[in-house]
Length: 406
Image (cartoon, rainbow, N blue to C red; front, side):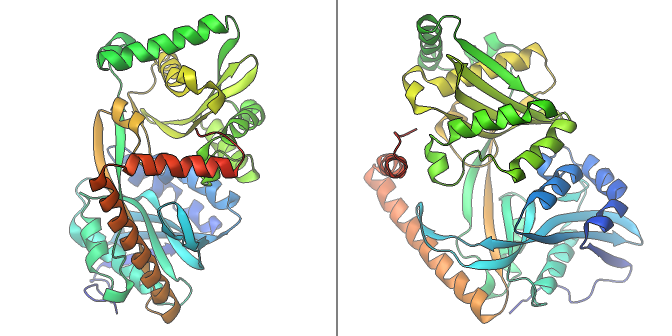
């Protein structure tokens, strides 16, 4: 079923596949060298973050790292893991079928190579992955958020066989904000209405709760317990929690945060009102970029636009200790990201399924439901009520949790 990839590497080329934690330490220096060659990198591709995630995930079976070399010279590293994954076949937010497969998940920003990398390197890496897929251990490969302008994406659409391809990759916008020179310049970049609304709501909050509004930034290992408890308590009241995308207080979260705190990346901002956690913003400062991982607020404070107020307070804290130049809003589109973002690109997430009966059947169900979802979404968009449908769905989710909409 697979066509168009080399069964054997050209002379002088070889691939070292790392499948254990102990072996990863043997390539640590190479990993860091290749990571340093990227113009910018996300923390997902950092070796210490990767190891923390691998050790913390209960459904992770093993690492899977591919080092591509030519004449013994390291050229590229592909970072992935083999895990038990539920492939959620859904319409909209509703999951109808979620089979569990052995999935090789490629990390976000998980192909490390120099800026001069050519198409042949991507072809060889993908070709080796497809050979692994035929081995029987792996049922599918999951590529998370590949830039649509990357040379890798056309290969992902072309190289797998017809019945193994993901027919409808999920495409979403990714937003990033270059920090202006000052807070005054930030406000000047907003529309007059947006600027006035933020200042009015913040002023009203401080007037109604004088000396009872406090922003705290948790960044050390000793802060993890309080930060996690506060953020999780807020998250439980949001629609993201109902969707399974909220901030969770579990051992996996704490293990990952401990690594981030020890490396100096962790920033969990929590806004307390009357000593109660009311909104949170979880960020990772990696390099010169602050990555916004999760946000949430208690719907009780919605009238104060508490999410926007917290964002501005966090910006003020960043400007007091200017160690980053930009904020990356991470995955997915949202109104607030469009309001603040200064740079935007598209990213696609897709699966490649093994050429066996069951994985191919899962692929058929998956792309059939996704195609139907896309068709319904287009109809709703043309009718002009797609936003109302999303709000109604979120309200229904929260009602199922006994909460108001976020």
